Length: 123
Image 1 (cartoon, rainbow, N blue to C red):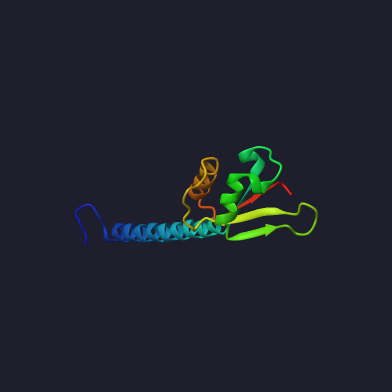
Image 2: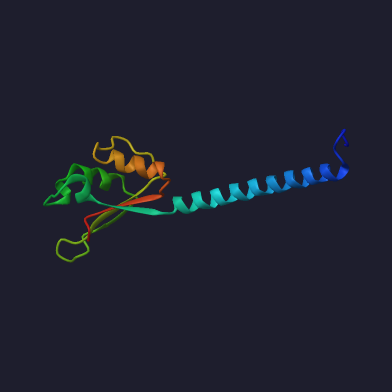
């Protein structure tokens, strides 16, 4: 449609620009989606001494007990002395009664769209 002061060629140029902008928006949405999927498969690691301080036995730390009870993966007691003590939380799960010292860690992981959090002793 020609309006006063606009030629058919300027209308075609505007249509071309609108189509290009629409295509760029679709590509942007696709990149954001790919980034979000990559984040959801990422793993954040947390050394428990940074959260609860030093301790002698992980089984005596209430935060460790909560993590162990809510973990979707456990790697413990591998037969080498004290062994390994690490657990992974799947952040797509719903958690209740989160210990106060762990709340900021899990809130940050949720905010950052991290898929998993691995809690360990630095081993």
